[in-house]
Length: 120
Image (cartoon, rainbow, N blue to C red; front, top):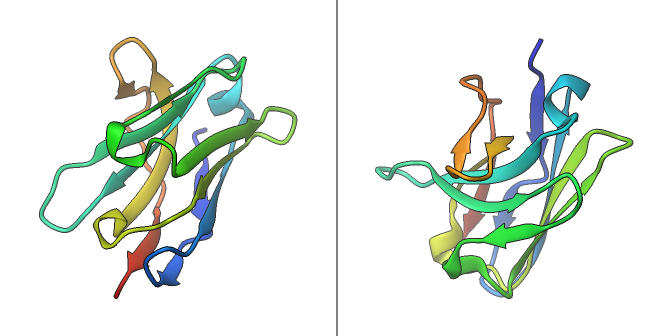
């Protein structure tokens, strides 16, 4: 059974930081790359960052140098440290297993996500 629970979102001002967490079931984390996606109002969901099981990471250009993805394989938990937040980072953030080569989610199921709002 797929189980994904995102948390850590909030309402912040530009320049501030947030740390998102994603608790997943073992069948999601085991042997899978993981990723964080986000969806802003009126826009499609986009992949923000990905991390392979061994720690190799990838970021979309707009967050490079500001966001850091990490994972705790023992605890089946994924993290996204977000620094220097900008209003354009406002979105609902989701985690999922990641098809690394195609940059697509591996599972059709999505959690409820966590809302990040950056306001001036």
